[in-house]
Amino acid sequence: MPVRQLSEATVNRIAAGEVVERPASVVKELVENALDAGATRIDVLTDGGGRRLIRVTDDGSGMTRADLDLCVERHATSKLDGDDLLGIDTLGFRGEALPSIGSIARLIITTRHASEPHAWTLEVDGGEKSEIKPAALSQGTTIEVRDLFYATPARLKFLKTDRSEAEAVREVVRRLAMSRPDVAFTIAGEERAPVTWSAAPAGDQLARLGDVLGPEFRANAIVIDAERDGVRVTGFAGLPTLSRANTLGQYLFVNGRPVRDKLLVGAVRGAYADYLPRDRHPLLALFVTLETREVDVNVHPAKTEVRFRDGGLVRGLIVRALKDALVREGQRAASTGGGATIAAFRPVTMPRRGAYEWRNSPARPMPWSPAHGNVALGFSEPEQSAYQGALDVGAPSADARVESFEPAAELVERPLGAARAQIHETYIVSQTRDGLIIVDQHAAHERIVYERMKAAVDKSGVARQILLIPEIVELDEADAARLAARAEDLARFGLVIEPFGPGAVAVRETPSMLGDIDVRGLVTDLAEHMAEWDDELPLERRLLHVSATMACHGSVRAGRRLKPEEMNALLREMEDVPNSGQCNHGRPTYVELKLSDVERLFGRR
Image (cartoon, rainbow, N blue to C red; front, side, top):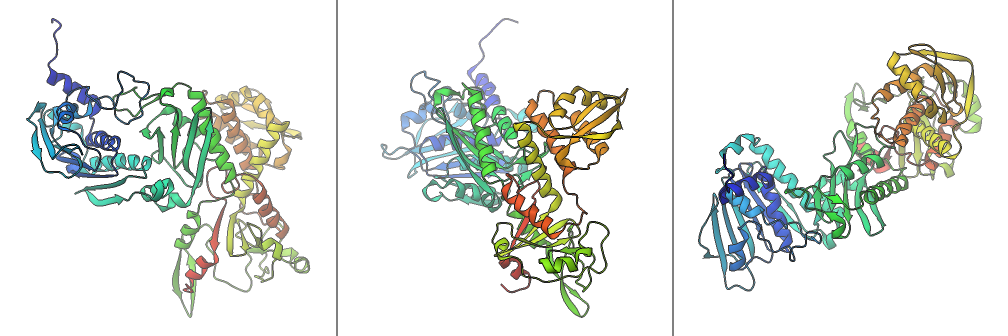
């Protein structure tokens, strides 16, 4: 077959295949054009998920008649100064969106520039351009796209349901709204109720993020702000205890442009590696700002991918900014914990008396009785000797009583308060000046041991204790070989092992800070974790998995009764240790209830 020149219509439809994947792609291009035109208000309307109608209206600068005539021609743009592709400071620049859309749909553009006496309108139907006519419009531009893909019907079968396509449109607008809190957005369609995000006062970014992502994110967000060598990272990141099972809650922007970039996603994962397991992901909105010539946005026609001149600098800055912020706020736990706790209570009517029952909770309390053998309390010194038998580690005593006492005033004023009780040998209840706190003793101590271990490794290595009789742990041959191959790394954490024939290892030393531990369980867990490691992970990340596993095995277990001084000591350590608001698995270590919340339970407020 001889080489021949493709027709202009075919070329436009090929280009449309790269630019217009679905209705959401059209909305993205049109809203970006509106933002580039200086709009302060943008309204988006869809019908049939955008399949039948997309209408985008803005109050931007609009176009003159001459600009309108040219804007639907391929590679015609007002956003490039000459042929410079390195100094791009606008969202659009390729000059492909409007002609691509017009080649596969029915496109109507109505626009008015301040220098023109009236508005003008232009139609493009399947690539055929009409004459420009006068029209009525007070300001800005309105673009309608009808019957999307009617000129390329094969593309229609790849679209999802109207509701799914409408949700994709909303997600596109959400991302753009996050980057421009100074602009008001409205999105409406038959699939869902209209949503309006008013312009945030003084461009308050957190206010806009709260409007888009919800009050839960706003209440649990920490400020991110760091700069190095001309690159700045700002935004807000959720506490580790506010996480998801996927990365859909991660919103990343480069010079105001929403992007999906592996380097940025990897940086976020690395920063949270110390706080979340691999199957949990944080919620955040990060904005990277740098010189336009330091980033290439012309990587893909959809403009969602970028390439940095110095990717290492950007990645390192993001990791450091997130880590510093997480350490700074490390003792906070998500405020959602208290709300969820309150929601778990509901009033129930019991025979001859009223009570509140805590449904579906691991710490579900029993009705009060004078003798409650499942509660160990904190006592003053004279009371402690009298009730010491009920506090010793071991089997619960049926004679343990619920006692009221006045805690030390100085402890009540501490951030985590004074220990008042231990419930089900798992949860510590402490009293603060304006409420109470419930602590998961295992989760809290796990974080404390983990931070101690990290500090020891960084300083001089973890101190070890020699086992009088080495413990032989039988494993699958592959697991045993995997452990033996990393024996040197494990020794840095105080765990000394060596091969003991096929399918077994001998454990000769363990970390002294872990005390008397289940060696077999620890080694088995380590073997299972190592089987899931990616060999391309940095050594630091792999070692963090080791320390996290050891910390879990060496911490105070649920089911162990603690003495009052032990409970208070744990609370004080939580106040001093970094990141104590969450355990190594991203779960909260404590829940705080304000006195006003408790009073609401009893109808006092």
